[in-house]
Figure 1 (cartoon, protein in one colour):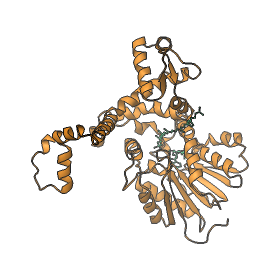
Figure 2 (cartoon, rainbow, N blue to C red):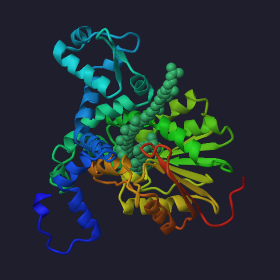
Figure 3 (cartoon, rainbow, N blue to C red):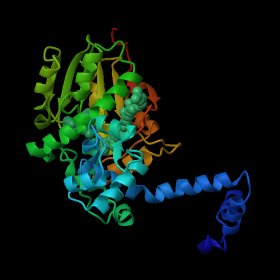
Figure 4 (spheres, rainbow, N blue to C red):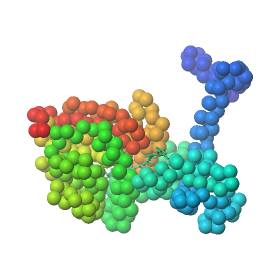
Length: 380
Ligand SMILES: CC(C)=CCC/C(C)=C/CC/C(C)=C/C=C/C(C)=C/C=C/C=C(C)/C=C/C=C(C)/C=C/C=C(C)/C=C/CC(C)(C)O
Ligand SMILES: C[S@@+](CC[C@H](N)C(=O)[O-])C[C@H]1O[C@@H](n2cnc3c(N)ncnc32)[C@H](O)[C@@H]1O
């Protein structure tokens, strides 16, 4: 701690402890003390993990771009064979494969060939994950100068990647919208699974999913709860993809599609529950407050609202959401990752009561806040 050698004000107890821990002599002492040296080593590993995270992510991106995991699904292969297929020199391919093995995605065999490890096999099976990793090229470019990014001196490319967040007019190009909608729909499988596992849907007779994309969440709800009627509300160009999805899922009779913009239009009435899945974190507090008012107006007394998205840990900062999703939504410029308490406050301000929060099993997939419109309970 060289630049803080002379404190300007009397340090607190925590400050004195910080100076002690930051002293190389103290660190050396811990490192050579039996029983304590384990702490020193594991702290070093944790620090190195932070330092090298970007390189780990870029190794993964290279494995994805070159389809290395796919190439190893059925049989192991030697670096030379993969090098030829991927257009790399054998030496560079060996570096990539060794890194993949070190990251637990591949397994290095005794004969020098590389096989797909359990984590690599699982990675390929997670819906939408490869596409997510690929699109990180845009995010990581935006974060190349993180200080300039935080000062607002850069023009993040991610803001252009998602066409809809600036309003209905942004989602005009059907091809761009399709790319975006597919990425969302693919990654929706895990969100739907966790929402269905952690939120109580009992008593709901008609669910409207606002900002529901092409209906992937509703399709999952429809399959899990055969009695629930379904309504989808999203921008006109986005919901075009929903008709085919509902037909393929055998839900055409139970599902109604409502094209519209929640910025400009009131929401259709009739549903006794409204879900907002990965919608609020795209938008400013003002937009969210106006949207929640519309949600409130559309529900009957006792009607339920379900918010499902990644949330800040708030008082307990979370490693996944308070880093990746906080920077991600900042790069989009319009939204932010809110804690369950912040979402609860916005719901209360819109008139909702009985607000309940549940931290997700996998917070990087979703956490949940539910609330009710005051009045009579909706009939079960
Ligand atoms: C029987 C034998 C032989 C062995 C048994 C071994 C065994 C049981 C293995 C288990 C393997 C297994 C089942 C693994 C499962 C792994 C899973 C399900 C992993 C899931 C991982 C999910 C991840 C990493 C999700 C990442 C999500 C991301 C990055 C989401 C990003 C979302 C964004 C950017 C959303 C943006 C929306 C916007 C634009 C802000 O509005
Ligand atoms: C991050 S996506 C989430 C989609 C889906 N709920 C999911 O989790 O996969 C946000 C959704 O909100 C929709 N959306 C954004 N602005 C909207 C608006 N003004 N009116 C209606 N939907 C809107 C987008 O089209 C998009 O489908």
